[in-house]
Figure 1 (tube, rainbow, N blue to C red):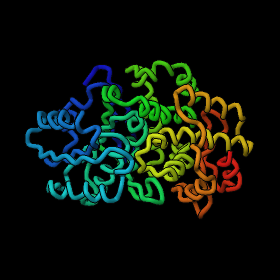
Figure 2: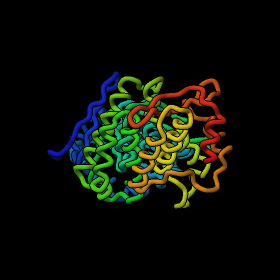
Figure 3: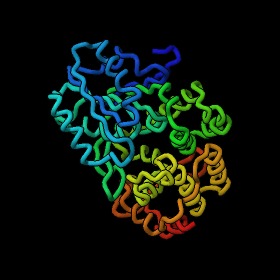
Figure 4: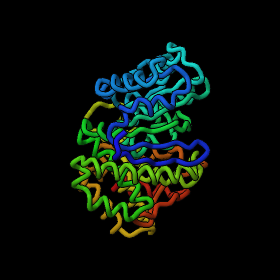
Length: 368
């Protein structure tokens, strides 16, 4: 492991370590140390597997020649995060003969991490999972915290389970092959951490935009570590999202509605990806907060300006009906007793969960 590696510890009943730095995927001894038995299912996708799957398999076999390693590859994209592909992953575990001490390695972005983690949660009522995120978005968000799920037609992540990983290895060298659009999408989630709880981090992101957009290793490692530290603190206190952890969803209720309404399985490049939808969602949440008298419009402007600096969208795509988006929002998992429950803010670094939000006020914001 590189001397530049940063370590973030996630505390709690199911404590684990996040390793951040270049070369993490090549450390076979570290990877194999989390395999209690002999069976490994390496789950990846059609974009990431050709780049890194062979190297991970070789690293594991070098450290543990006795391992039986099978590979399950999904088509790349959100369209693959389905119950059918979840079932196919379960079949792959069955074909491997995976026993209760097996380990699933999730090599890829959020789609792979979510589906592989869900399969690990369900096979024999739960086997180990190690997350190997290869996108910035998955490094700072989906790989940490144990949320696993698949999508259905009615909405994102509606079928899933909490299943914390045994470890997370965020190899920052994989970001060098990441398309610029995907890098920017990940930076939307990084900005979220400053927006919900850390004004100083938010200010750092305002100052360091050039280095982060250029893919500077040190700047990205700092951004990833800072984001993971924030998430780790919250997850340790609220592992099952019964309170504070909901703050991590700033912008997500709006964003998921946009993704679902656009058809998250669509291959069209003009559809927003997850990070882009969250960027729009954060601005909508800030606008709603201002409309409710919770925050100053200057904070909304500051957030929107930062997102624009990072090349992220801040307005709802054309052609989406406000009423349809609101209908999608009603299915959000944070809602209680059929009432909208949203993450809003009182300005940069001051997010809070607001119950029973008036749907008419939300509709007004969605209508622009």
